Image (cartoon, rainbow, N blue to C red):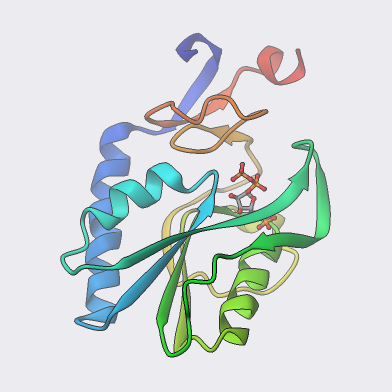
Amino acid sequence: MYGDVAEILYSREQIDERVKELAAQITGVYQDRDLTVAVTLTGAFIFAADLVRHLPNSVRITFVRASSYRDAEEPQQVPQLDIPELGFDGRHVLIVEDIVDTGRTAVALIDAFRERGAASVRVCSFLDKTSRREVDVDVEFIGFTLTGSPFVVGYGLDRANRYRNLPFVGVLKPEVING
Ligand code: PRP
């Protein structure tokens, strides 16, 4: 698996440090307010697992499905959402994403939680791929901003549902991507 990687963009150590900083930033914003963390499947599961363990207060955690790609390639205009009926009325919701790309998924999720009566909705994304943005979205908490449009894998991010378990974020070799 590691042999398929051309370059490591963010090491395990860099990620650990950044996740702790993000958790501190989030704690500073929410203070003692009751927080509901909505983790987008599948990609955010590793980031979220690390992040929530650095939050000092008890939080509610739920998992949402938001698919913006079919067959890993073709972007859809309207992401399909699947949100459990946890009760969001009056709640402070923090959406946790692995990556914000076009921004369509994050916008759809923000709208969905607002429609459900959330008191506040914010977005925390491990990666921000600003070069691909198609819609305006406020990502308040960002782990790392990607410059350019590298296709990255690891730490939850996949290529055809593989490589999510890499402990770092890397770029695959061209022959792996094309082959
Ligand atoms: C990825 C990621 C975000 C979305 C971002 O999910 O987890 O939810 O794409 O893209 P956007 O900003 O263009 O909407 P994906 O559909 O690849 O599913 P996965 O997490 O299961 O890999």
